[in-house]
Image (cartoon, rainbow, N blue to C red):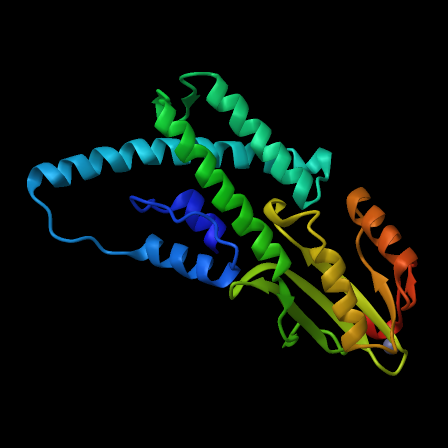
Length: 246
Ligand SMILES: [Zn+2]
């Protein structure tokens, strides 16, 4: 996942600027993230290490701002554009501190060049997040055994070949019902429309079923209630679909 690599992996010495054409930009960036370097003298190597450390500190700031925005999702429920704004605001606040003190890094002294790096990394990572969301798709359903008479399935919502979250459900064709057991996305990918994408796939894959959910939490109920209103398939708030799920 490019966004995670930009925030957590060692940064290359130069980052390509975002390009208009997505694919060449992603390819250049992915290549830069894995580029090997030519042999160096000891002094060159030391300079490179120092540069890496200072770039790592700036990366830690961008990551810290990202984590702060993710931590607020439980209460703020920000869709992607608003999430990016919140991430931006957290980064601006950290840079404004002059020498922000991060766990594991101590006070980080920020120069003008560091500010440029912070903002260009933020620009790349926030765009990579948006790209991951825009290109998320549902993988094929696979059978899972939950020890029930009815068949059970799961599938993932994937982007860049990696799962962003999973859906688990069962179906009873003879009674015409489907039961959604669990739809789970980590906080990083909440409120991005991916739950909606997952539920629409359930309907598309099993178009003749009435859907039940086991979602009991307040957030989950609100989500299902909103989804049901806009869905052409029948969804019900009742809890017990048919005896075959026992
Ligand atoms: Zn049944």
